[in-house]
Amino acid sequence: MSEELFDVVFFGILQPGKDKETVIQNMAAVFKTDAAKLAPYFAGGRKVIKGKINAQTAEKYRGALENVGMVIKIEASASSPATTAETTGNSQPADTGSSETPDNKAEEGSAIDTSGISVAPVGADVIENPVEPPPAKIDDISSITMAEPGVDVIENPVRPAPQEIGDISDLTVAEPGSDVLENPPQVEPQKIDDISDLSLAEPGVDIIENPKPREKAKIPDTSELSLD
Image (tube, one colour):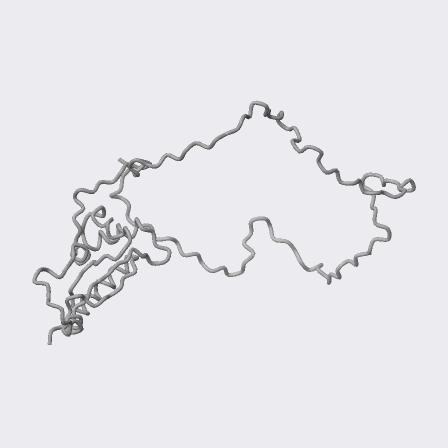
Protein backbone atom coordinates (compact mmCIF):
# COMPACT_ATOMS: atom_id res chain seq x y z
CA MET A 1 0.00 0.00 0.00
CA SER A 2 1.40 3.39 -1.02
CA GLU A 3 2.23 5.91 1.69
CA GLU A 4 -0.24 8.77 2.17
CA LEU A 5 1.15 12.12 1.04
CA PHE A 6 0.54 15.59 2.46
CA ASP A 7 0.86 19.26 1.49
CA VAL A 8 2.35 21.97 3.74
CA VAL A 9 -0.09 24.88 3.24
CA PHE A 10 0.20 28.56 4.21
CA PHE A 11 -2.73 31.04 4.11
CA GLY A 12 -0.73 34.19 4.87
CA ILE A 13 -1.58 34.09 8.59
CA LEU A 14 1.21 34.95 11.06
CA GLN A 15 1.71 33.97 14.68
CA PRO A 16 0.32 36.56 17.16
CA GLY A 17 2.70 39.48 17.65
CA LYS A 18 4.87 38.62 14.63
CA ASP A 19 5.90 41.25 12.07
CA LYS A 20 5.47 40.33 8.40
CA GLU A 21 8.82 41.68 7.23
CA THR A 22 10.65 39.94 10.07
CA VAL A 23 8.91 36.63 9.29
CA ILE A 24 9.91 36.91 5.60
CA GLN A 25 13.52 37.54 6.59
CA ASN A 26 13.46 34.56 8.99
CA MET A 27 11.95 32.30 6.31
CA ALA A 28 14.61 33.42 3.82
CA ALA A 29 17.30 32.50 6.34
CA VAL A 30 15.79 29.04 6.88
CA PHE A 31 15.58 28.23 3.15
CA LYS A 32 18.77 30.13 2.27
CA THR A 33 17.10 32.23 -0.42
CA ASP A 34 16.39 35.85 -1.27
CA ALA A 35 13.61 37.40 0.84
CA ALA A 36 12.14 39.12 -2.24
CA LYS A 37 11.36 35.73 -3.80
CA LEU A 38 9.18 34.80 -0.80
CA ALA A 39 6.87 37.83 -0.96
CA PRO A 40 4.21 36.06 -3.12
CA TYR A 41 3.66 33.51 -0.35
CA PHE A 42 2.47 36.34 1.92
CA ALA A 43 0.03 37.91 -0.56
CA GLY A 44 -2.92 36.00 0.90
CA GLY A 45 -4.82 32.96 -0.27
CA ARG A 46 -3.80 29.30 -0.17
CA LYS A 47 -0.14 28.68 -0.92
CA VAL A 48 1.52 25.25 -0.89
CA ILE A 49 4.99 25.60 0.60
CA LYS A 50 5.87 21.93 -0.02
CA GLY A 51 3.60 19.33 -1.62
CA LYS A 52 3.35 15.54 -1.84
CA ILE A 53 5.56 14.63 1.11
CA ASN A 54 5.10 12.05 3.86
CA ALA A 55 3.71 12.92 7.29
CA GLN A 56 7.09 12.96 9.04
CA THR A 57 8.61 15.38 6.54
CA ALA A 58 5.48 17.55 6.62
CA GLU A 59 5.77 17.89 10.40
CA LYS A 60 9.42 18.93 10.04
CA TYR A 61 8.38 21.68 7.65
CA ARG A 62 5.56 22.74 9.98
CA GLY A 63 7.94 23.00 12.95
CA ALA A 64 10.53 25.03 11.04
CA LEU A 65 7.97 27.43 9.51
CA GLU A 66 5.96 27.97 12.68
CA ASN A 67 9.24 28.65 14.48
CA VAL A 68 9.86 31.64 12.18
CA GLY A 69 6.35 33.01 12.87
CA MET A 70 3.99 31.44 10.29
CA VAL A 71 0.73 29.56 10.88
CA ILE A 72 0.98 26.30 8.90
CA LYS A 73 -1.69 23.73 8.04
CA ILE A 74 -1.01 20.15 6.94
CA GLU A 75 -3.49 18.88 4.33
CA ALA A 76 -3.80 15.54 2.54
CA SER A 77 -2.28 15.83 -0.92
CA ALA A 78 -4.69 15.66 -3.86
CA SER A 79 -2.64 12.81 -5.34
CA SER A 80 -2.34 10.77 -2.12
CA PRO A 81 -3.69 7.16 -2.13
CA ALA A 82 -6.51 8.12 0.27
CA THR A 83 -7.76 10.85 -2.03
CA THR A 84 -7.43 8.62 -5.11
CA ALA A 85 -9.49 5.88 -3.46
CA GLU A 86 -12.34 8.30 -2.79
CA THR A 87 -12.60 9.18 -6.50
CA THR A 88 -12.29 5.60 -7.86
CA GLY A 89 -16.10 5.13 -8.03
CA ASN A 90 -16.64 8.11 -10.31
CA SER A 91 -18.49 6.88 -13.44
CA GLN A 92 -17.37 9.77 -15.63
CA PRO A 93 -14.46 9.08 -18.02
CA ALA A 94 -11.12 10.30 -16.77
CA ASP A 95 -9.46 13.19 -18.50
CA THR A 96 -6.45 11.95 -20.47
CA GLY A 97 -4.69 15.26 -19.90
CA SER A 98 -3.23 16.58 -16.67
CA SER A 99 -5.78 16.75 -13.84
CA GLU A 100 -4.10 19.83 -12.40
CA THR A 101 -5.32 23.28 -13.29
CA PRO A 102 -2.82 26.12 -13.73
CA ASP A 103 -3.86 27.42 -10.31
CA ASN A 104 -3.22 24.03 -8.70
CA LYS A 105 0.18 23.78 -10.34
CA ALA A 106 1.10 27.19 -9.01
CA GLU A 107 -0.04 26.19 -5.53
CA GLU A 108 1.74 22.82 -5.45
CA GLY A 109 5.06 24.10 -6.73
CA SER A 110 7.70 24.50 -4.08
CA ALA A 111 8.99 27.71 -5.63
CA ILE A 112 7.42 30.68 -7.40
CA ASP A 113 9.24 32.48 -10.20
CA THR A 114 9.52 36.08 -9.07
CA SER A 115 12.37 37.12 -11.37
CA GLY A 116 10.13 39.71 -13.03
CA ILE A 117 9.02 41.26 -9.73
CA SER A 118 10.66 44.41 -8.42
CA VAL A 119 10.09 46.51 -5.32
CA ALA A 120 8.90 50.10 -5.72
CA PRO A 121 10.85 52.85 -3.92
CA VAL A 122 9.69 53.77 -0.44
CA GLY A 123 6.74 56.17 -0.64
CA ALA A 124 5.98 55.48 -4.30
CA ASP A 125 2.34 55.19 -5.42
CA VAL A 126 2.03 51.55 -6.53
CA ILE A 127 -1.50 51.95 -7.93
CA GLU A 128 -1.45 52.45 -11.68
CA ASN A 129 -4.01 54.93 -12.98
CA PRO A 130 -5.60 55.63 -9.58
CA VAL A 131 -9.19 56.88 -9.56
CA GLU A 132 -9.27 60.63 -9.14
CA PRO A 133 -12.15 61.62 -6.82
CA PRO A 134 -14.19 64.53 -8.15
CA PRO A 135 -13.57 67.77 -6.22
CA ALA A 136 -16.30 68.68 -3.76
CA LYS A 137 -18.50 71.60 -4.76
CA ILE A 138 -18.00 74.62 -2.48
CA ASP A 139 -20.61 77.35 -2.30
CA ASP A 140 -19.81 81.05 -2.30
CA ILE A 141 -17.74 81.83 0.83
CA SER A 142 -16.77 85.41 -0.05
CA SER A 143 -18.89 86.72 2.83
CA ILE A 144 -17.04 84.60 5.41
CA THR A 145 -14.32 86.23 7.49
CA MET A 146 -11.96 84.94 10.17
CA ALA A 147 -11.99 86.20 13.72
CA GLU A 148 -8.89 87.69 15.30
CA PRO A 149 -6.68 85.31 17.26
CA GLY A 150 -7.99 84.85 20.81
CA VAL A 151 -11.49 86.10 20.03
CA ASP A 152 -14.40 84.12 21.48
CA VAL A 153 -16.13 82.84 18.33
CA ILE A 154 -19.20 81.54 20.18
CA GLU A 155 -22.07 83.95 19.73
CA ASN A 156 -24.14 84.58 22.86
CA PRO A 157 -22.22 82.13 25.07
CA VAL A 158 -24.00 80.82 28.15
CA ARG A 159 -22.90 82.78 31.20
CA PRO A 160 -23.07 80.81 34.45
CA ALA A 161 -24.90 82.62 37.22
CA PRO A 162 -22.50 83.96 39.89
CA GLN A 163 -22.59 82.12 43.20
CA GLU A 164 -24.40 83.97 45.95
CA ILE A 165 -22.11 84.91 48.86
CA GLY A 166 -23.52 85.75 52.28
CA ASP A 167 -22.45 88.63 54.52
CA ILE A 168 -18.72 88.38 55.25
CA SER A 169 -18.24 91.80 56.86
CA ASP A 170 -17.40 90.19 60.21
CA LEU A 171 -14.52 88.14 58.75
CA THR A 172 -10.91 89.22 59.19
CA VAL A 173 -7.59 88.01 57.79
CA ALA A 174 -4.86 86.75 60.13
CA GLU A 175 -1.38 88.23 60.05
CA PRO A 176 1.10 86.46 57.74
CA GLY A 177 2.70 83.52 59.57
CA SER A 178 0.04 83.35 62.26
CA ASP A 179 -1.23 79.98 63.43
CA VAL A 180 -4.85 80.03 62.30
CA LEU A 181 -5.76 76.81 64.11
CA GLU A 182 -7.60 77.45 67.34
CA ASN A 183 -6.57 75.11 70.13
CA PRO A 184 -4.23 72.99 67.99
CA PRO A 185 -3.63 69.44 69.31
CA GLN A 186 -0.61 69.09 71.53
CA VAL A 187 1.90 66.50 70.34
CA GLU A 188 3.47 64.61 73.20
CA PRO A 189 7.26 64.29 72.84
CA GLN A 190 8.55 60.75 72.42
CA LYS A 191 10.07 59.27 75.55
CA ILE A 192 13.82 58.65 75.16
CA ASP A 193 15.76 56.43 77.58
CA ASP A 194 19.08 57.44 79.12
CA ILE A 195 21.66 57.83 76.30
CA SER A 196 24.41 59.47 78.35
CA ASP A 197 26.72 56.49 77.69
CA LEU A 198 26.44 56.83 73.89
CA SER A 199 29.04 58.62 71.82
CA LEU A 200 29.46 59.52 68.13
CA ALA A 201 32.25 58.09 65.97
CA GLU A 202 34.60 60.46 64.21
CA PRO A 203 33.59 61.42 60.65
CA GLY A 204 34.76 58.80 58.14
CA VAL A 205 35.31 56.05 60.68
CA ASP A 206 34.11 52.57 59.71
CA ILE A 207 31.56 51.75 62.41
CA ILE A 208 31.11 48.10 61.35
CA GLU A 209 33.08 45.80 63.63
CA ASN A 210 35.06 43.11 61.83
CA PRO A 211 33.81 44.07 58.34
CA LYS A 212 33.91 41.40 55.65
CA PRO A 213 36.98 41.90 53.46
CA ARG A 214 36.12 43.07 49.99
CA GLU A 215 37.16 40.83 47.13
CA LYS A 216 39.25 42.69 44.60
CA ALA A 217 38.18 42.45 40.98
CA LYS A 218 40.39 40.29 38.81
CA ILE A 219 41.95 42.38 36.06
CA PRO A 220 42.86 40.44 32.92
CA ASP A 221 46.17 40.89 31.16
CA THR A 222 45.79 43.92 28.86
CA SER A 223 49.43 44.34 27.95
CA GLU A 224 48.72 43.37 24.33
CA LEU A 225 45.96 45.97 23.87
CA SER A 226 46.56 49.46 22.50
CA LEU A 227 44.58 52.49 21.35
CA ASP A 228 46.44 52.81 18.04
